[in-house]
Image 1 (cartoon, rainbow, N blue to C red):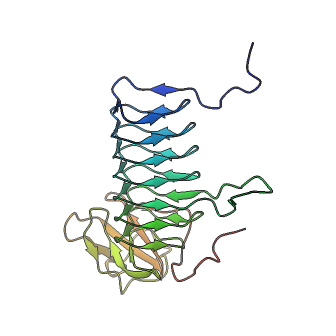
Image 2: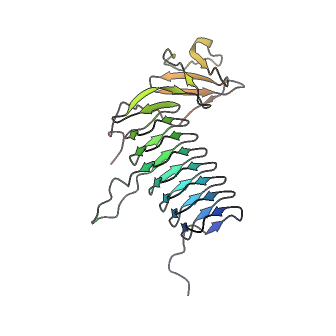
Image 3: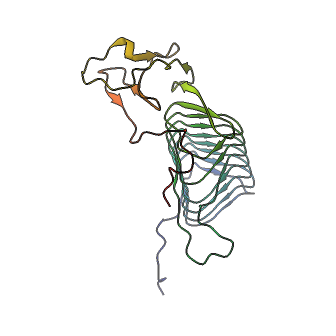
Length: 242
């Protein structure tokens, strides 16, 4: 007899994946190529983990979590439902993504998912707590012990509780001096050298578009690599729609 509802995800575990015998990986899940899952970790049904990922000890990955490729999730991390980690994200030890905002101990209505997006290359330091429903920008750097309760721009460095802004960092990790950015996008294909800053270590170039928006410029042709949104880390809570 066929079940009334088929699972939305076919169970798949790559032959090259390593899952420690003390860990629980429920079905259905997707575990990608050359991914390792270490001791005492629990991966709940309908979670997707990409290729070449490292999942540390005592990690909880809830149903509906999406993990990209080349992601490192260190020990004791809690990934609750609605979390999306893009490629190359690093989650330090004891990082916690909070439960959905509408969860109650005795819910009268079905809880609504509040997606939390961590974009490519972002780094979350140990003991960071991320409130649900926010976006952490590409290659952003979150210092250890930070409470993330608002959207974070690409390449930004933030720390503390309440959250504070500490500057900008290149994709390679070097600090950028963008305090005198142009503040507005040039309409000309040829940009002024004064409106951009080059990383002293890797040479990647950046242009400051506004107070809270920095663009990375391609190495050839000056094609702008832009994000889909602009964020303001000075605005707290109000960015989250109900």
